[in-house]
Length: 260
Image (cartoon, rainbow, N blue to C red):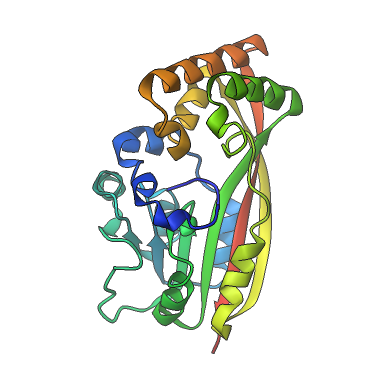
């Protein structure tokens, strides 16, 4: 799952479960994660990995490829089905309600999904599932276009979808999640709490960009006619700028170690 890390997002279950209707498109268009991030987490030599909010299994697959035994937790049946089609074992549940049955893990990860977890429960439950010295690593792909593209896209949002002009994270990524650092420090369960970033970039054309943003929950919840008009206008703006746009990603990892 995805979106920005706004407060109390976990309470909006309709939004959290809005991705199932576009599960195939989500799997096609959402970016993966940079190898350097996976290298960081694999440096801890994890064998058993739990992927919270695994979605279609984008992060899970990267750890399976590195030889890990991965279990995904995903509340949306359509997203879970696609993850299974990629060979990922998935339990359908929210993290808060999931019953681990005594299973313990070396590493718990969450890509684009930790903001859907109740912050009053998530860190405590994660700590209870990690072996002492194990790690919790949650990460988000955040990105920004060049300034000229950003201005052109913002004009489209102001004109057609002003209600998400200031909050859509595709054009306006959220700030560093200092609240997550505080959240991980709560209860003194974790140490070595830190944030790391991994920069990379890609390019989008009209089709790939409009497909990408159409999988964001704030866009999904717009009325159909408004959403179609917005996507068409965004595509026109990209065409007017030459047909492609460079997008600068910075994948953010918030990492913590379970106290011994």
